[in-house]
Image (cartoon, rainbow, N blue to C red; front, side):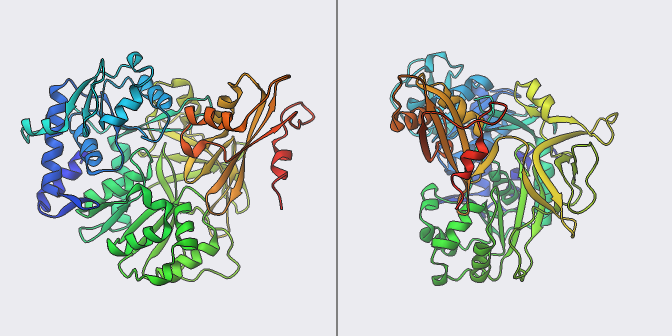
Length: 523
């Protein structure tokens, strides 16, 4: 098997009448998902989509979103999920950078995207799931036009090395960076994870992550490969832990996969003592550090579930795992990120260039193998900086991804997360480059200096706080600065607090003393 869409075709042949995807009261069987995505692929081909073309998906979580990604893949395209909650300026930046000429969107979201500056975009066509007003310069193709096309998809010459999707993460230069994942990259991970976790037709996988978040790859493609049912978690439920817990029980979820911060809120505020969850067999958490005290609560109320800490990056998929023991030692306070999945190669290199093999030593984590991404879209300099030859054998053709994560080995051979080499942090499971926020704040004419720090938080991973000093004679209003951030950054990157000071502390070499700012939040 070489292509992601073949996972659906095989399961549609094996389980034609079984429910493939469910969203609230709506659902599609495997045959319906296969045929509808085939029709979409034919429609896209009729409107000029060819092998390698990037096609945007600008939809809230929905059945149409799942149809869209399979339809794009079957047309030979590369799907580029766009976060509907992101500022329009950020979305336009991605569309320009990826050269997206056609998108699948709802009409109102398309209108917001094009309200300002839309005439400068390469986007000329959009398949709309919900009609909007006429938009000059963009041809709107109604979703119901799918019915005019047959169920035989086009047959583009796509191979395993061809790009399948591009996911965007926060970038230190002020612009999001697009990670290019091939069919082989994704399939290598999906095949391994499906086998390792025994995902089968009897499973019901909750899809909590949105399409633009890399956790969705496990949910969607492992479910489809196994002939399981993919149950889309309504986006609003994350804000209401009790309703989220009731969703788990009502939908008889067997496999849960989310960032740790969602589970900590579930443990802390979900009233789990009122529920029974006998069918929940797997709980995966990642993205943030899971406080052990909340993990103990979850294990008490989810007794049939095996708990796994999953470590990975968009650039290399998930590569490490740690299975939480049935009985957590009383003295346990931090969960390791674990050891490599079967047939994965992960190692750490210290500052001297030596591979870390002894407990207690620290080094930067490197990932090698078929899951390592092709690189960053249209960014050879950044690609060369993070994807490089294997340092243990530079003459080989093997490529490694340098994660930037610092780790050390424990006595059992597990990697333990020890920090970052740069200013990237995790907040609510999302990667946040603090430099990107500083660039936005420094664009304000009244700001002389800006420094953004992350304060550890057991519920969200990190709270983002910004310090700014004003230029002489300038008056800064916090509301204006929040509005500036909101116009250029996704919601999860907007600082929780912005603190204005006449000056910011500096170190002996005249750099902003971020450690001094962080100490202000120490108890």
